[in-house]
Image (tube, rainbow, N blue to C red; front, side, top):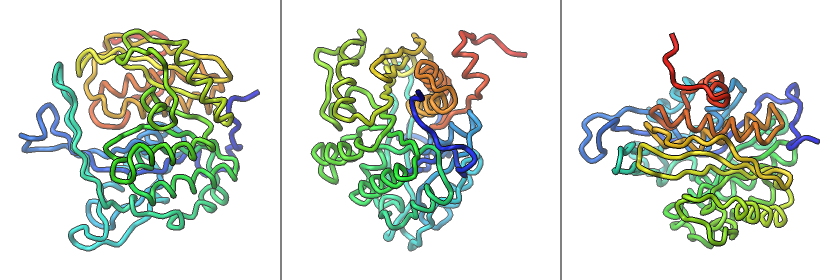
Length: 366
């Protein structure tokens, strides 16, 4: 019996779509935001990064459901997304004035950190076009019914943007399920984002409702505790010692509450310095726990987006291999590789991912 049941490829325009915000990331490279004179521009967003990886690394047909203010920055974002090969036809363009009073496009200043200096993010994303979108602004019946989508990915970062975003997430997921689309959701709890619309209480209200419709739930222990009210008793806060039985107990409890969960997955990171982490991942399916290969002492160039690249590798593995152990290893390897390059999004190839999964090293290839 399959872990997840996918719609036939021939009846769907897209293998996967994401719903969420895409921001312009401004990166000072090796320097600091506070002293920069130059920034490199990237596109990025917790939900978008997943479908970008599914297309660019794994070759699937993907699209992004989002909205941009119709101005030059919005057009730059569209161009960056197009360069990554993600379909832009589902983007909604929103009229704005000259200074962003009606709506605007989000900015995300991110410095990478090094050694004892941790990475730093400074977002400027209030009043963005996508945060103002309501369920009726997107034709979800057309997207999931007429066009057809095999997999929808979205998450708690987008949901936390606004009351409207909470409503839109639920509408999208419910419509996707109506048409047989598999749904994955990354809890990605950010207390600073939820604080403006009701804090922890609102985060639990929304995520507990969302969870009723999710097939593949992604999140770490903090996410499960804050968003869904589950926790691991006695777990080491820094994951120096992995409490496998604790994770299994927590996930089994969550699966009893939400019997619709087919897969639950999390990354497991021990931060030694900003540039050296121990990294692996865990996946639960049908009552069993599967651990990925461990990448101890992983040297990191840019950690932002590593969890999103894990999610895209996991989704690819579930879609093509129907094996949770293989899937969690696709995710862990893809996430590890993504953190060796700059920017939010993956620059890895499927061949590189599979080489790392198979124990390949870092010898020069000529």
